Image 1 (cartoon, rainbow, N blue to C red):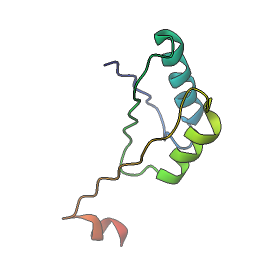
Image 2 (image 1 turned 90 degrees about the horizontal axis):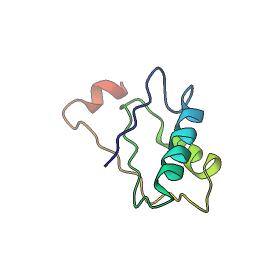
Image 3 (image 1 turned 30 degrees about the horizontal axis):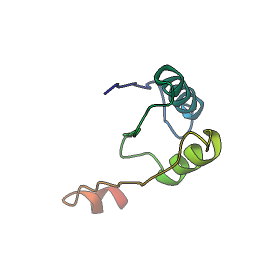
Length: 82
């Protein structure tokens, strides 16, 4: 597995173009032989915006959204949402 880290900002705001470029570069290097791409974000990323980036800014012939997984800290989520 190959890991590409995008740092220096929010992936759904300032790094959205970086995500698209990173995925395109990965596909070019691998000859489109990528089975899955996992995008792990911080707890503050808007999942709706991530879906928009994947569906609207990436080549739909090469990349498709399979699922969105949301992990919640059940012990602390009420304090975060308040």
